[in-house]
Length: 602
Image 1 (spheres, rainbow, N blue to C red):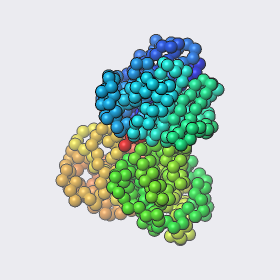
Image 2: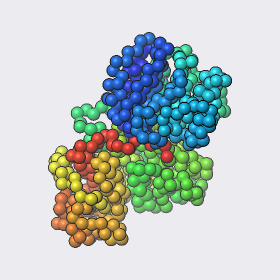
Image 3: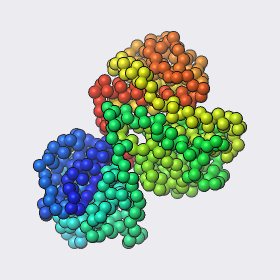
Image 4: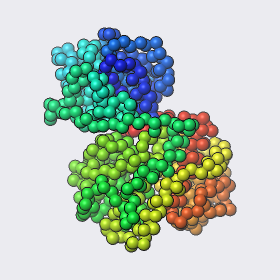
């Protein structure tokens, strides 16, 4: 959610900022801007909408010699998407960019207005630049920056530049990601490593509470408890090829097609002849654990719901799921015999991160399932398992969900082994089934073409029901979410058996139902629910391997010997259906409105 970039050095700061923002487009945004100080002159440009609007505004800007600059893509939280509300925000001779939320901004704004400061925007961020300038009257620039940091409450990643320190960038991090990269005398900042790939290899992932400044010859990092923090010198990869579309129409389409490859990476080295091996987990990691609590948001929560079925079925252990944004405020009862598992694609999801902090405070053992190494959640958890999904640029998650489910499925089998809950024959069959998953998700061109042609029939009506039973219920939720996210059509996922308990009142010919019909799991029960809908004239599209006379349309998958292979095939079908409907409706598939890839505010 939002993106930050910064640069200090003799290279072309303008294009470094714009290129970095381009790499962060996938995070979601509604406006963008840059501020650049070159030869003692500030240049600032802002634009609403897509980044190319900002690029056009900057086209005549020429930078010579040494310069410093900051840039930002904004996802509106306070104030509408306008140029006035876009970052960077300015004072007299100071500019700031900020990710996160300043929770006490209203009180600070009132105080600053009483002190004579004028505000130009509706944002919370603008209070920071005026706080800085207030303290700048009596202190050095760095001391003024530190005092401003001490006054704000909430989550933030902040970069600030000011004309009175023309060779420095000030920074601070609390709750929102921020990375510093070094390459010779050049300094780079970004909120995600995607913006740094190809620019630098040596980086520092800031921890909460760290702040400081950089100049051409100096780097200073400190915190409230440590006045000198060493540069981590972590290493970034140099390969950017995976971030390109490679001939596909959209990143989402590319990422659906590469699920086979990334799932093979997810399984590699973990699925062994005699069981599941996670080198990330120490011996005895599950000792004393009597319950599992899975906590996540959005798509990751649907992976958690899926996993709850698998843990109880395979490992015979009590398992519950929590929506992180609700868990934070429900005053939950937490037992130290509970393993607290958090799931996040980015590792920066604000609500999930705060839930993890609660679990840590309650002294629960914690495990992170994540796609991003060195992310905040990974660093905080007691142990972590990386999903190995690679860069996912489409805002609507596809391969991240596929790999999360795979890791959780493997984890359920790993725990089942340790608990002696599965006999050897059942475990051997499960391991073989896991090995078949990469092939199961390989996109069949005939099915994709069938879905593309079918999609034109599903562009009207008053909504969609997605229905399924058992693990196909969370898949129904995920299928409905994909359609909502990128087509803006109303869709809801339901347990198939719950239709008669209220939702069926909405059913008529103009309500489309996507029914996930497994042959391997509760086939007769699900078919009976489909019959109930057919009797009320619902328009039915059945996804499955079995023929269904009641279906108006069908998306046929290959017959499988295991319900999880059906699960993965249906996952691909629902992803493609959502994408093709969105394309026909001429929506922005990769960057849907109002959404962000990494939700770093609650």
